[in-house]
Length: 141
Image (cartoon, rainbow, N blue to C red):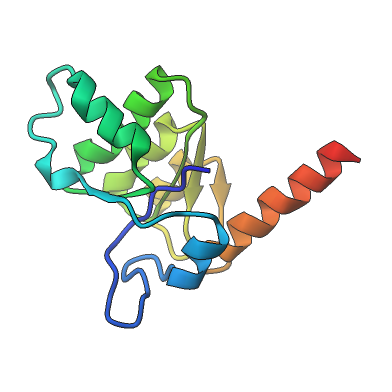
């Protein structure tokens, strides 16, 4: 499951901007390999194979500039992944629109809500995890 985070850990293990807790990430099966996108460089150039592999093997991301979010989604899709992305701001809108499932978090701007496939009314990853579990149960039975 690839659920790119939106923020950074604080001392209590919370994701600052979106309110994601470390427990939510663990419950989602996310590892600790968080890739710092600020090292991507110019996203207008074609991604190198090494960068694409790093993105593909990451458990989550610390976005640098807004273009990095779009670039991450695009690379994962080109490599055959179905991509979900969470966001809350105007700068997230292009990546939310590009993702197979853009998820606007609680309190998102109008631009993020308009670009997203889903708008959450509750904070945190737990609501996404529960939706995935319910969908899996309904499709298997």
